[in-house]
Amino acid sequence: MSTNDSIAARITELVNRHSQAAVARACGVNESSVFHYQRGRRVPADFCVKLSEAMSVSLNWLLTGTGAPEAGETMLQADAMGQGLERMVRILGALESEAEGALKHSPAAPRFERLNDMLKTWDETQQRLNDKLLPVADRLVKSMSDAMDRMNLIRAGDLKAGLEYLKRFDLPAEAINRIDLTLSRFAFLDLDYQRDYELRQKILWRYLVEGGDDPRRVLEYAFAVVHSAYGMGRHNAAVLMADGVLAATRLVPDGDPHRLRLRVVRSSCLVELGRIPEAVSELSDAIPRLPAASRDRYWGLYLRTLVLAGTMQTDAAFAVIEGYAWPQDDTALFTLALMDGRETLLQRSLKFAEKSGALHPDSTQPTNALRVQCLLQAMQGNARGAVKRWLSAVESVKPQQIRYDALRFCEVEILRAGGDQRAARIRARQIWKQWDAGDGAVPTGLFPGAYVYREMLLLEPSDSGLHARAREWVRRKVRQGYAYFRPWVGEA
Image (cartoon, rainbow, N blue to C red; front, side):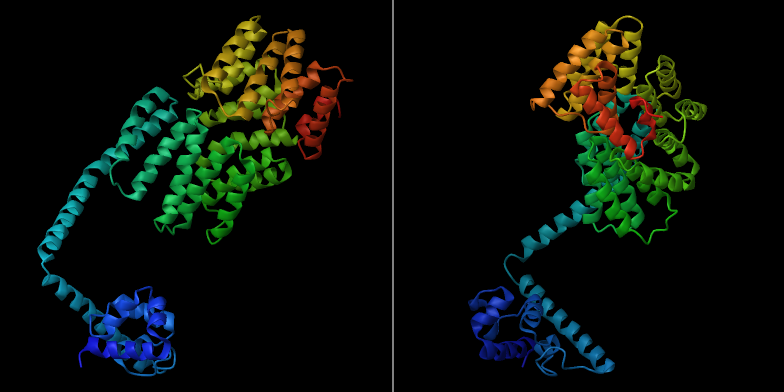
């Protein structure tokens, strides 16, 4: 009796025990297929495996006829198990060989052979193409990154088209991730936060779907996603993702730079969520242990957080940051200068950005630098021109609604800085009336909220409802640990 006939006999035995319909249903095939297998048609190897699993019978018994049909009751000794597995592998191989033999003698065999040759040729061609394209992609990524480091977004934009084109080819997933990471950074610098967030999510999920199992790489890609979520104002979601990734990669040493960087960006979100003591504790532990280059990159964030917590003065933080002129710290300086509001600090923050090469070249977008420029213009006597310049930039980018409302409210700040208290108060009340009517949303982020409520404290009389709302917001922040805001409500 041939191997196939002996398997057919045992299939018939199972049909007699359970019914032909039950066997067919268990293996996901038609009853007619089971009938033909019983009559001697070649039995596919995957059918045998499915039948063994679905009907709880021993695969060794089904293929060889040895032992008992019930799974797990045979081959108790190690030697017997090894012999049985070896025999099963030989029979599965024989079944597949039968299939190949049947294909070779079929009329369609020449076409299958030609198709197989074409696929091999395609794979070889793709490999040769990749060998030529990968160095090109690496050079473009490096050139674009250098341009972005110098804040030359015009040059980076020219290179962006080349990288986008390379993504059309079937490059390895790791190369596509490098390209997308570069493009996402450009999107962030170009204020396209939604695009940045989408690209960084794709990078992480692509790596996981492709079977990536390096926990440090997961930490690296998760850092990119959390950083982007922070820029989008999705602070709760960012902290949840960071917590999940940190827990899933807990075997990575606590001093690993990838793990420390994720903790740092998570702390940025904690600052926004009103968890300032936790943020200070995390940053105090993580930043000093980073390698020198990364530590310098985040030192401004750390100092800004210390100022908010009341453990460092604004002027002292300014002096430290200005001392080493790391480009990314222009954000920290602009934030501190805008919260303080002094003309001297605004001028120093702008000079720092120019000196470090971090000044955004496009002065038509509502960046921190443009906002500082408009405030200085208003302080020098041209408040109306500054407002027009600022609102033109805000309207040009059409950001999401809540960010749009925060940027629009800067008009009030510019008018007040220019000395037109009456116009600033009228405009502030108009915007608040629209918010209360549901035509917009009061800015919820820490810094946008701080700017809005500070203006209400400065512009509204102490007995007005808007002044009371602003005072309550500031006091709530002080209770959360933001000691910096205490003088805003006249408290020691």
